Length: 418
Image (cartoon, rainbow, N blue to C red; front, side, top):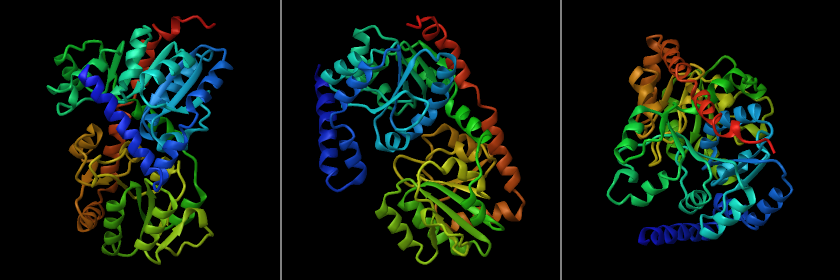
């Protein structure tokens, strides 16, 4: 009981801090504004929805891309259901709020007992799917009370997580809410077995299916074609301030013939202005493109293009490797056969670790390291070899969606259509 009280106080405090931050932070403002009247909006939409429902919840955009191949496979195979998609973060909701693959898209209301009851009354899902690690105690507890079928997909676990610590009782209890857990690797299955969780299948990671499908259907981008023509290009995706400052120092070390496509994680105006100031006189914004190819840096101030842009790179720089949360999605670049470079904080992501181990990615710590890595790849003719290792790594790991869908056939596939 004390742990539940502390959890409720902690989540309440988090939302209070976000409300204060919303006064001066654009992302926090979206977080708060998007939840005003949210439960009533959900209730209204669900009152008008007569089909049985499937609910998928994702923390943010990365988890959505992980859940997307499963959501689209279910929609193809079970078109009689309405699909409800929720996000916790604005970086997921604001980008995908018009995604045509779901029938209803909302923010997730704050995790309280009252909200859990109201949301589940409204959606009344036949199946609930949580992606990777997004666990909310009151929602899961209410689902257990209602005997709802809840599954966790593409989860990955590490020994240093709270689930496996003496203080992790509440987190372990949340895991018992899931009828089935699909994990990315055998190590995760072993960790769960150690705390008595046995309803587990090693399915792999559905993100591999997503990037394989997306790469097969990628569209040409006229601006990128014009900007890159005749140049070697670094496509730097999901960058933060630390990445950008390092790349600014690295560019003069690369010699002539190199250009940079910079796709920052945050595209709000103040950050774009900071980037323009950092690369003073060298930048052209995507939104201001006028055919001028003389600039060395193309700043992409539009969301949703990164997956397509990686294929234009000679190499890819994956942002986030200098921050506490670690490197972002390396698979979106690796699938195109691009050598991947990133900063030193990457060990919490199995795919980044494995790409480094097989030689499909390189870890660098500073601007000189970027220049040295590119000289190595260039002088020894390793671009194609390193890139082929990355592409092969991705292709060999597809199929997680098929495994999950096979299991779901015994749940959603046997539900009545009406």
